[in-house]
Length: 293
Image 1 (tube, rainbow, N blue to C red):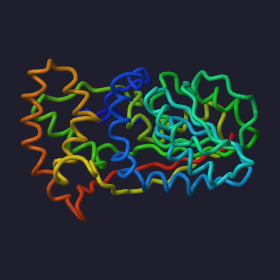
Image 2: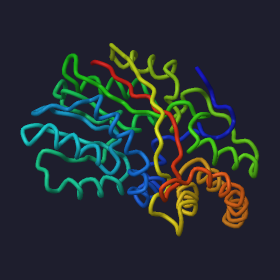
Image 3: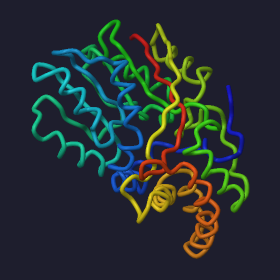
Image 4: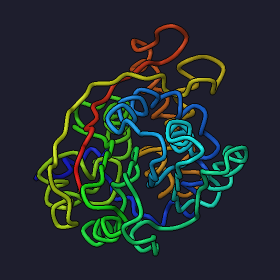
């Protein structure tokens, strides 16, 4: 297993944080985040290939853009249930699904929610499975909800060092604030599933088999529509969500303001080479994991 290298991109981020400020920040930046990860959505849904009349779970569905896409594919005779633990995101999700009778989102933790046993044809998640505090237990609970041989597709972040959207800001934050505290391999967080040596045993312990994965480089606009220009938009995203935001949140207000001023001064020229077509287009790597119940 690969552990944190101290750059902070693997900082622990448990599920409880999504029920507070992080969920609010994600909701505030939802449109920019959706734009940044449109390729992740396409890759994941392409692997899932939802079919008419299927019943599908969407774990950690956020604003439910993936939930809606799945619902449109399964049609009115199918059923899609999204789950998320952020009240702000669940409210946005259900507003966006109001015109679909066969899709909804619950404010619930998939690791403990009482699903209809054996009632679901597939489970999907885009960036929603890396935050469980007891991953094997969570996947045993999810597995119990699925029909035999049901499909599973999970999109997760891979290779923190090669994911410049995270490693570049984290590295500059480390220059200003000092190295981040290392976290154990597989700790809950955006890169908690960066290695197959982490996620394969978890899925096997949860009852899944036929586990496979493909790793894809993707590029997306960072902070699109935020700020007065592309770099300002990307800086606003960094300040609001991610390792830099978390590290600044550990400081008092005055210290955080001074630290951010210096981080932004160094980060802006580092982001400038990534500007293309009116946005900072910065890359990363994803695993698209497939499995069977």
